[in-house]
Length: 103
Image (tube, rainbow, N blue to C red; front, side, top):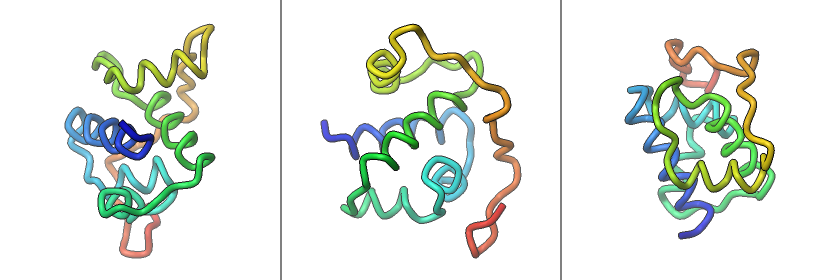
């Protein structure tokens, strides 16, 4: 499974667990409302943006919901001491982005 496939799988799990719109998740995880759709269509992603996406999902995963195996593996390789959730980084996904990509 490629890094992009892993990111998509994690994003899909997050969308399923939260009910958030894909464009909203894309904005918060990747900084642009269309990035997730672009990845699904075969676009590439720079390593630093992929890492930032994994970090966002790890930090913002819904409390009490099991992390997907892909995200557990990423966390284990990046945070051998364990991931410390940082509430200051949690994002309110109830606000949907406007057409320009802003919340």
